[in-house]
Image (cartoon, rainbow, N blue to C red):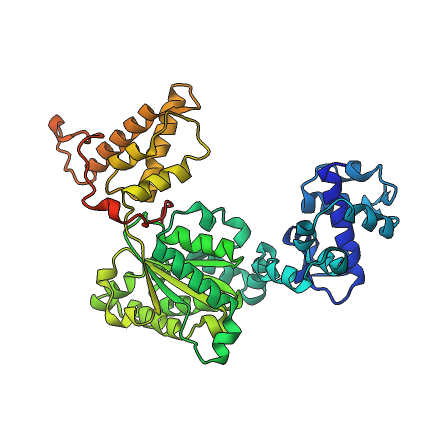
Length: 451
């Protein structure tokens, strides 16, 4: 029997069990099974399975054709509905063909077949992505609390992503030991929020990511949201304060209100050094009020009480004053990668590429000072160069050439180009003579995604 038939029958059984077991709620439905039935902020019984809903839930283009030969399925030609004519037979057929992992991944069926497969329904439910993290739920919640004009204004200030919309995973990143340790800590804090509240440890869950551009601060925060199935609310302070000055403080408050409405979630504040710049400058008084509002809002948000994990990021930690620093219970460093980490990063970002005689250690040695984002740009240059030669495979020479091109381009950023001064353009040093100055000692640095 095809996988398509198993997928369709699982969806039919899920709809059948969910319709008849009133103790189940939306969080028991798998996200892909939940989406076709979501309407007006919830899922209403009975679940009506049609060709369209089955196609959306399973990805099977012709769902009826996949199960038409099964004795226990039926179809209404007029409405396009698909149903189980004999649910008991369908259950027997399905359970004979699937393993425990598949049942555990579906809380509805985990509850129905817990004894037959020895699965823990509560654990299956806990592992299932909460409805609060679905795009449909996020949109419905925003629509409920903000009118169309306010929503449009909010979208100018924040970017709200559902976990399913984030392609990055933590496994896609090369992290330092310290970064991995902090991520494990915060994961445990999220998991044991009730315990932390009971023992009175409430000042936790406010992280500050510091490091140069391109070292993975934003990428790590997004990947964390994906892996923990949390909505991701991203705000750039420059956008908040670029609005009409009289509205800036209100816009800051709205941002935190959105995060609390979407909790549990991650609230990510980029360009946090803007706080210090504004506090020390002669900026308009409205901007200073907005910054003060931001700092007070940070004080008043909590992972333990509000289910909001706050992560701020800055490329310029030296510009932050003590008032900004003390609002974070943990600071996570994102340095530029050392040679061995660059080698690891190259191995990760080239794993889907066909490269003849690829030696990442040579390229890593040649790219001292480059960030993970820079390394991606080098690979981009190599791929495009090969495509201009009508090739979809790369060579080590392509990568070497791309490194030299990147260094040449990078030199232009610090160069005054004078008309007629053709000697101003100097190519990079290529692959010779790079030293990492003790770089080898610390293997654990940096991510490979850009900020």
